[in-house]
Length: 509
Ligand code: BES
Ligand code: MN
Ligand code: ZN
Image (cartoon, rainbow, N blue to C red):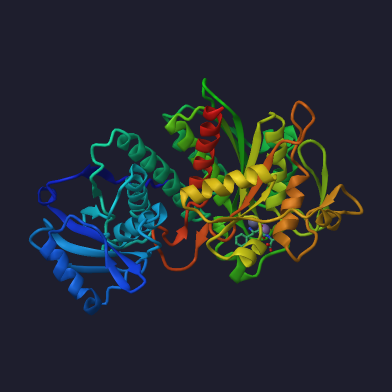
């Protein structure tokens, strides 16, 4: 599996010319009365002439706008680049607009080796947002094109120009930014891999490979073990494929742990729909159906690499959903781990079947909280579009995830879990059917998952929330900000931020 090359960072607060970079990037905001040149290290006279030219240059300050000018004498770079940061709300520029502007610039400047980012920063968090955005924007999938001559190499070196260069908190913030970006980029690569290369056995191998050198124990359960131990959901979904399923358990334990967290991810390496086969057009993006498991995998690794004081267990529920003579049929009944039975009325509602096993397995270890991540429903995309994920579950966990997403710069939105949807999942032959009310199908799927959340040692239901990332996990459109085409790495940043928030809250107590 190809690894993305990390970019190198440094931060300077003077000697711009000595940097002798390929490009100097400065910011332009979109103000109420047109483009606004943001603070930069350029001399007053350069700033004055630039300001006079902005309108004639067609510079608007819109996000993703990138205008290249010749490198002026005081830039010390071959080109001067004006990068849009989008609408300005007051004087503060949000961390996310800096992250996006840095990502967009670095992405669009591929082909150049060394880029200086001189966007305004007044807090360490803003510097690390620039670094994170740049590392995300530099991502490239090492594609399978036979002729790569026309490919532009990703930017290899980024220098951030900031007055905060000597701030004592900077080193840790930059390390966090590059660790998180590495986790997001590794998630993207797993999603981008074609299913001919990434199938259950190779996905499990990739989990082991990526964990090498980190204090993470990886246990791969193969089909014999899954059959023996009663993982009927994963086995059922995987039985139509020539490539048998896997459950991968990834454990990180800290001796200073303040909480025990379980993460469960949907890992369908290809979702054809099975016997209830998808129409051709709906199948095209279905290599992305393991994005939840890839996000869980890389979140566990990032948390371990950052040495956060928590225990985290990731459960990757991995199978390939294929039609064949051995595939499950509509009306077959599966027995999920723990004994609940499910009548499969639609083999394309397979995510909830593999996740049921994962949620039960996670519950058996009595974690303080369970969070699951899945590209679960087309209805999620209809409800919230291509960029916003949904969170459903217990109010406390959902609110904490929403707050973490806001801080991390990912879009998630809370949705309800209406009780009245539960009877729509009744089956005449089993405990549950795998499909129910079609309208609001995202919530129906979440209500199904809820049935498999176990109880803690006091008999209370374990706190839980579910992230449906069907829309934002995969970008079918053009790249924007730091988001490339195809796999986006959705949910990793939210999950890492959530774990950090759990730690911060326990420190306040
Ligand atoms: N993997 C799909 C959901 C999906 C759709 C993810 C679009 C990403 C983009 C899931 O397994 C699925 O097929 N769900 C069905 C459920 C239905 C049969 C109840 C769906 O949404 O149509
Ligand atoms: Mn499906
Ligand atoms: Zn699926």
